[in-house]
Length: 131
Image 1 (tube, rainbow, N blue to C red):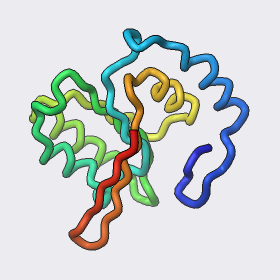
Image 2: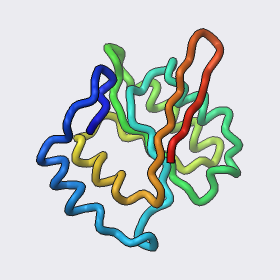
Image 3: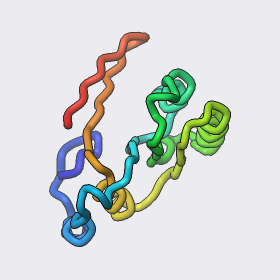
């Protein structure tokens, strides 16, 4: 199933075929990538993450940001995210909106997928992760 922020829906046949074909890599073939998949917005915290994370924790990893804007042009935010990552020595790629097939192919290539959920109300945030 794919969570599209409104309800859980079945995975499309084409997406299932991508997973079936692409998810055959061995552990040694997988990449040390961290993926953020969702809307790119200032309120989502992607830029703050790049500004505040101890960059030593990300050594050996590439952070990939996938997603588009939400009624707001995400390009200025994406450019700022790239600039901050470069200044801080963080290996990051800001892809913007891409096809679900491309995201699924990338998910199949990461060493250990996990889900990170952040719920924020005002200035307080709760973080949940699930391997």
